[in-house]
Image 1 (tube, rainbow, N blue to C red):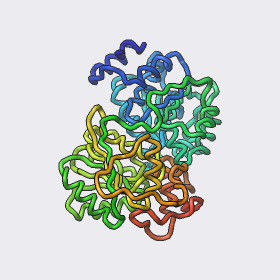
Image 2 (image 1 turned 60 degrees about the horizontal axis):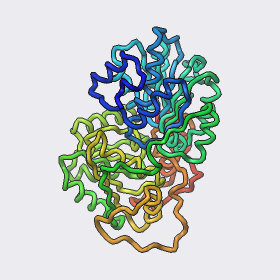
Image 3 (image 1 turned 30 degrees about the horizontal axis):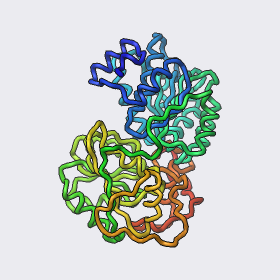
Image 4 (image 1 turned 180 degrees about the horizontal axis):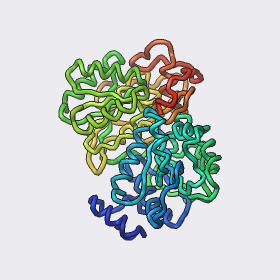
Length: 440
């Protein structure tokens, strides 16, 4: 299958060819022809499979069919994403593929001036990429209307649910016209997705190209069993083996990310950190420096698990096991991109065996042991790690509530978290005004 067999107009095909894209990915092959027919689509595909073009190309094709200008303070197409990083990645990819076309692409996320964003929306946008919280802020101010929105995309819909955006999505649905085309893409299909589908989709075609929990074939996965106090030394030894290659390190909390980054800098590594408490400018600079190689190590919370598309990331280290098993798939999916090989190493303490067990259930196999001894199963209460908890801040939170349930809730506890994440505050606690729109 080639792109010119999908039914796209020649102007788009020439742009695709100029960028060296040859064969469409499976999700693109199946979704694009159906989207061109006007069908609503529910797509299930893991991260890194080309979903941006799967929804971006058919929308661009429809908008390029006319030479209409975007009306002031309106958007012809709306793309919702859970985090700033993913929203920016989508807008950058679309701007690249649509360079020279008459289509205006807008981006609205938290952590940036809402006044500047409102001013840019005065001209309107053909395609608007947004995080849910900041979008609602602009709608409430009267800076934007969705009355003329004819195309809607929900990208990484499962993470939007993880991060507590269900109420925001319901509010957005009420502001959209009934006559529209909706494309929903997700890496997993939790139970709440049925409610989202009922509110947004009309007789959708379900397209599934990868089974839930499947990890990329080219990722070499392993786990090292280590005591919490020894994790830093173990990580430094692992990083030392590949100092010239890009490595992404995941922690559970914002505080833990900053603390670990300082330790690694002291150990002589070029390190940056991104999480929900960083400003958009800080996060963008860190990502750019990491992408250029100026930084060799990037420490992140799950805010980055679906917002980093850097083909040269060779190593992913889980300094702490994720609270939500599905997030393991998205974390390690930051490596082995664009057909390259990758390596994912998890540092697991005895206290995290519940999380590891949940992960192995999701991916369908036991992860190979690369160090230490796997602790024997304990007669402990069932792990809660598969409960839908927040995705690590940095999504589209609105004023007065955390942007990401899990990370924001963890940061709400008194005092810092232990390195092994053993101190877990009550899930119902929320830091009042902690993330707000600036964490969007």
